[in-house]
Image 1 (cartoon, helix red, strand yellow):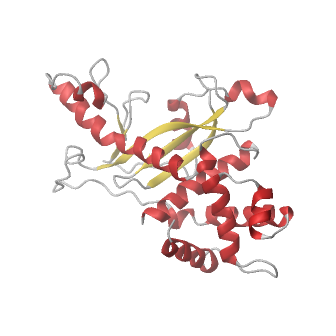
Image 2 (image 1 turned 90 degrees about the vertical axis):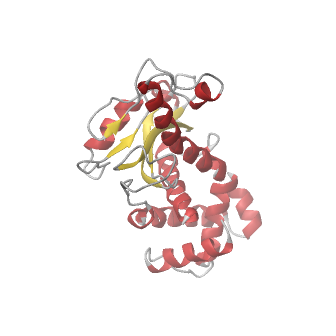
Length: 266
């Protein structure tokens, strides 16, 4: 995050989130400590030494900034914008009225021993299955962390749709998704049993059928969500390995990282 984005974020947290200086710490220091812990996966005792604050103060300010960032989700989440008929974008012009793409990703969590079986993914890691929905310009429209790593992507999506403030797809619009999801109203999946991944076309023959051609274009556009997840994890080190926070706090951190990702890309 550059200086401009940092100062804009601080002003937003002050004006819209009502975060204020206290006797010992300015808002700028609070945000700097918060970003340092997210960006470098820094422990509280390291922040204590770097900023000259007690561990208790570091913990309290971290949670204060986390709460305010999450309060600003309506400001920071991207509003979906459909692909127009006149679009000439090589990736997206094939998908008129499309709002973006969605997929799931696994992020390591610190689950209690009694819950580890539920959070164990098919690769054997203790993770949460995170649903992410992004726009064509790699900003998050919606994110849902918290589901156990053993759950399927389709189950997580059904939960997101059923929530009162969950994922909504306007009539006549849709999101691109991979074959792990059902091809249903509002969600467009590729043809099954056909070549799909870009590497198959890059290192193999050109598409021979209309279904293969559709899958190639679908994969090229839907790849935006995989690149967005990669950028998210690359920017915030706290998402790349298991943390000492409980699962509930970790899920809130994942949402905050997605919101900050959007802020940086604006």
